[in-house]
Image (cartoon, rainbow, N blue to C red):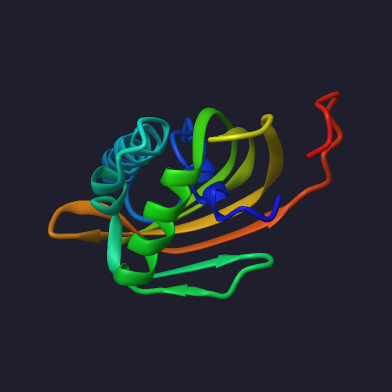
Amino acid sequence: MTSPIRFAALLAVPLFACRGGSTRVSAADSAGVLAASEQYRQAWINGDTAAALGRISPDIRIFISGIPDIVGEDAARKLFVDEMATYRVPALELKHQDLILSGDHAIDIGTYEEVQLPKTGGPIYGRGRFMTIWRREGGEWRISRYMLNDLPDTSAHPKR
């Protein structure tokens, strides 16, 4: 896929693996990252730009194949507004592969499959890999870095 809306696909995953810190801290932090992920995912499904922006860090950097780097909150706001005005995301399936925790940072790695519905035209199916770096800011987990790359569509879905 070439659409930046794929950014929505990175969240709301069950967190299976934790590394770093004590078990107690890691379990609490895993739950915190999961809650933030679900809030972010719901924001995209609901087309709620303000809620999605509430889950990102002011110094966010987004790296998606095929588009210039998105740097900072203002650039992310423009991306989110434009994408939510163009597409609806009714389905996001995420397969979590790893969650690495260390202090105030968490690295979430996995794959996604999604369906985008443009305001006009048929559904767009996409799949790929993601890596998200979360940072605890003021007691809340926020996305500070996000990287995404597409994988070939091997499903039975119609081609985009």
